[in-house]
Length: 319
Image (cartoon, rainbow, N blue to C red; front, side):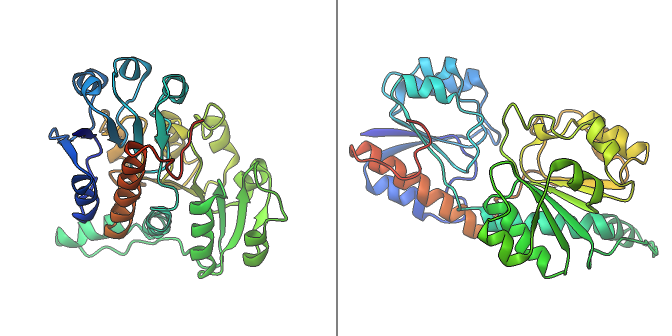
């Protein structure tokens, strides 16, 4: 019987179907019962004895991979694979897959929700009303404002489509997409350079993968180039923003505020700065809708079943 380690905490949470797919294929499932991602040391206890791993943000490092004896596939329950050592996995003949498109609408929905929440201070209004207060909070409308989208892939385009309903002027920066992109032309999105986007956007929504180029892409220098009335929303990866520079930018009035769903450490260890005014936080829930969860689970399970049968899986990300 093949053994599958379910490291991803949200796997099959919204539907029994992904779990049943694996069980029907004769797999023994080993579940993460810690209520948090595994550490490298904890993964070393399981890695040598399993044939497949369904992983969330758990660290699949070189050390973990080199401890494996029968591992054939790592199925990412999501899209970003920056927590997986692809070079070592490839060298050891271990297939890595992900689930592109499964959660794009869920993340785009949340990004748009965070834009509205930070503009109108919705969480603060909720807290104060429940505390018996009746404040007149003066927010910022998003109607016909300028939205800068950094990263114009599936999710970035989804945010653009939603924002078009608010008649927002749409700017996008993505070095891999040019102005002839059909989607951009359809919605009237202006593909522009990073500097212009920083200077003109009233809201910035980040949708880039974590790479050496995008690590701390937003820092003290970039915040100085933004409007003092601008807001930034991040639903991509926490490391894309230098968090201490963001804290200082908000405190010093370089920008108006921010909304974060992702952090450099998850869960965050330094909670003090998360409680600052004009910062809205959510616990990395971008992909957490019932629909997205089921689709991600089905895609991950299908990839594992195919590999264990000796077939080629869809959405393989390494050679």
